[in-house]
Length: 119
Image (cartoon, rainbow, N blue to C red; front, side):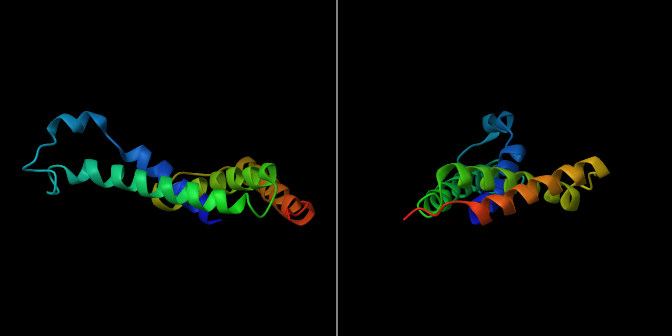
């Protein structure tokens, strides 16, 4: 769950990165809000959440099978991204999307319940 949360944050950091603003970055404005911070904050978040994601996911695959961990991580990340889009970006959701997310959640529960534990 922690890896999926970090992956979700990493994804949104990537969404907010604007490489076109890189040319406006200078030593005198990189720490100011109208200057470099709108570019640097998503970039720093991208690095930190990416590293945290790698750490938490690598910890998870030591305790459960890799395929199960990857399926759970991917599906949970998709659900977290959709929830974030609903809350923070006021995007709409259809009943079909709710249905398919429920199928994903049922799949996650099935994988967690019936997965063979690694010793």
